[in-house]
Image (cartoon, rainbow, N blue to C red):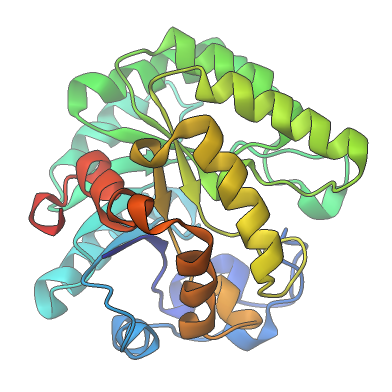
Length: 292
């Protein structure tokens, strides 16, 4: 089985883990303002049956993106984990092509994440504006990923999903991996309707995959009922062949053990779908062919 979304880090490499806490979508994070190395991740997954993993960029300083990928690749060479790397490149930059070329030379790099999520609530805001998906430079740069064999991890809120649909349609050769099942943060009737409408439109794009991860982000707990609700919706819209599991560790270590988190996802996914959700989809999208 594959964990398709986790991080490792040395605290000194990540500006947001140094100095005072900054607003983050997952709230206070003092317990993880420290090193989180691959050895600790392996301890966390022990006994779960996870046999492969995908590292997702962890917001080093933007000009250190290549250093981040190289460091993770070195950790992989040393320990055998992770098996694939989703790195960072600035999709708004006119020099993105050069950065992407350098990243593709790093063993294991299979995708890119540039977080586009923006929210009216400043605590949930990351991108400089709500419409990055529709910027011409962004579309041009993301379109390059198909030729390079790279996927794009797409992180947006429900209000941004129409723009995300436009982006996915404009780049049909690129596989998009929707982060955290579309980041449902507003559980009011209107909020859920907006999210479901956006998720349905994204599911209609055949090149969009849904990552079942980070579902404790806005509630700050491991809630099996909450996980089951969102997993059931995602599976209905995307189907198991377009859904994959990711732990979002160590972020979710703030409120749960890996074993308990994994058990909640396992219970949420019907047995007939587990092969795809916990292995096949991630192996296909991220190139972990020996873990199908």
